Structure formats: structure tokens, C-alpha cells
Amino acid sequence: MNNIPLFGLQKYIWWLPSASLVFFATILLAAEVKPVPGTFAPSQDEAPILMMDTQEGRRFISRDDIESLPLYATSFQHFKGLHGNFAGVWLNDLLSAQNIDETATLRFIAHDDYSVFINLEDRLKRDYLLVTRLDGAPLTLTDFGPMLLIVPAEAESVQAGTADMTHWIWSIRDIIVQ
Image: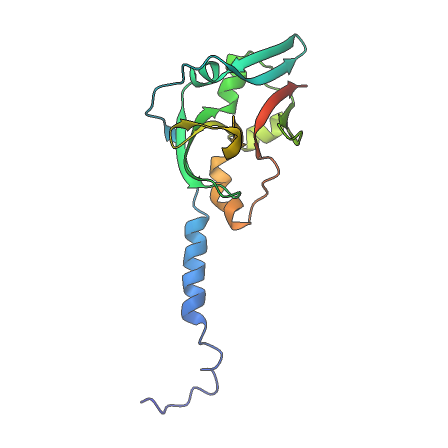
């Protein structure tokens, strides 16, 4: 039985088991990460962590203000290395609570002055989570805090390099409403 000729195919199919495993792993990595309601108490920290600039003026928003909204948590590996249980509020919930016009374009500015623009079309395509905690602890500047903006549904695809991460931003200090 072992001497049946394979017409030279044997040298070409040695990789088939490995390729099958890689294909299966890719399917698992592309699975959507879905946040679930958080089970921890909101922050009581009233120190401002975010500036929001609107036509009406500048507002200072605390972790307490943000976490007074419903909290959601999801576990995944951030493409910059953080891994764990990320928790925060939906961006649209924060905008609604702050009476921000839903058609506005938002400019997120990080502590290093990096900027990302998110417009209404972006917010209709993706659900953005404004993360304030990692593994239950408030985010700090050393772990991309005090806030980071993620798209949980794209987390695994971004990690795998199959989705764009240019609308993700961390170490957010300011949101300019345009």
C-alpha cells in the first residue's frame, strides 16, 4: 500500500495539514469581539480626564461623568500589546449625554498630539467604545489612558492585520466637536 505512486504529488502536499490549521486559526481570529454590560461600579473620580471643545465652549469631563453611562466590557488583545478586559461606554451614548449634535465631526486628540477624525458616516458604520478601564482599573498614560477609542467588532481583524486601525486612538485628552 505504501508503494502506490502518487505521481509526484507527495512533495507538493506536505504543507496541507499546516495550511488547514492556519486557515482554522484565521477564522477564529476574525470572530467578532462583542462587549457585554460591565459588572463593576462606576468611578467616583471627579477629576477631569477629558476636554470637550464645542461651539458653546470648553467642557471638562471626569471619569465619573463618563462612567455614569452604561458600561460595557470586552476581552481581547490590542494590536499595540495590551491584553485583558477593556471596559468603557459607547461613544454615541457619551455624545448624547453631552448633547452633541449627532451629525458633528469629532476630532480626537491624544496626549502626543496625534489626531483622528470620526464623522457621522464612521459612527453609522462602526460602534465605537470609549474605554476607561483595563481589567477593572482606570487606564493611565502608561497603558494608553486615560481613555482609548476602539471598535470592538474589528478588534480581532485589526490584530490579524486584515482591517484598518486608523480610526483607533489612545491616550485621548481632547475631543473637538466640529
